[in-house]
Image 1 (cartoon, rainbow, N blue to C red):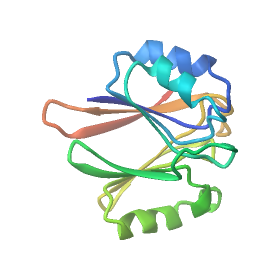
Image 2 (cartoon, rainbow, N blue to C red):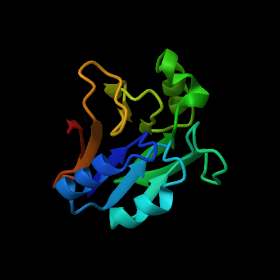
Image 3 (tube, rainbow, N blue to C red):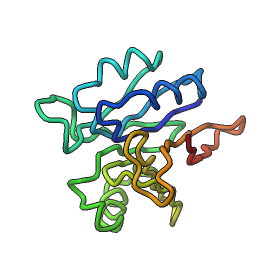
Length: 159
């Protein structure tokens, strides 16, 4: 299984399209919000199922605020993150993920990539493909893949 994780595209799709080309074929795309009304375009381009949540800039959208799914037997919680004050740190979102019994939490909002594996919880933020804010300001995304043993691997990737 090969999953592309993106966030905070903010109606700038050029890099999203490039990443889709570079990473195809995909089994799923996860978008952590702030698509700003582009969810149908993002879905069409993906060529596979798209899971997308509501971001703080997704005005007038009926997207879900959070989604809980299972991937390769792992319990996954997807949220934009702004309701958990992720700009101030990841302590609250990690605490919430643990209280919900999740193995993986995926969020966006900060435009900075994060991959943290600690005490059985995987915390992922793909950063932003459109407006990166980390040092170097390179557009980023995460690839989640399962190996032949079914174990998930995670990689922060840059354009």
